[in-house]
Length: 121
Image (cartoon, rainbow, N blue to C red; front, side):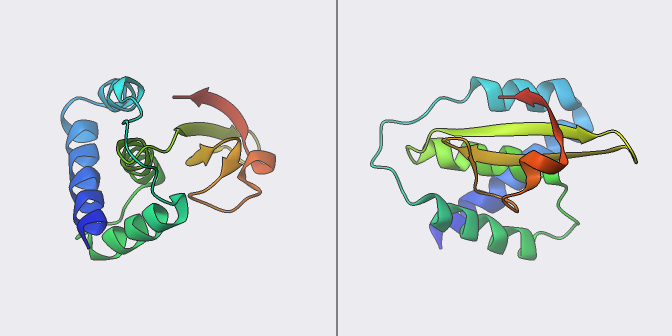
């Protein structure tokens, strides 16, 4: 339950940053967060908690907002997570997801094949 609340608050903060200060602030926030010296929690438990937090969030949760929150929540609990931003050229679409050890944990496993990686943070 605490992971869900923590995830909800991270979604709220990510939305606030995006609306008030824009993408550079969100990017800097994710990049600046280090991995905590904690006993790692299972990544799938944290991703499930973020799924639940997203369901209760009063607005539609964007992939960038969700990925930023998920990456930070994982890092807070000792998991070396990386937020990845990618794009597809035709038709143009962008997407964000989270990886741990090169494996997609917050989305479908084939995201790496669908989108060309633009940034990792």
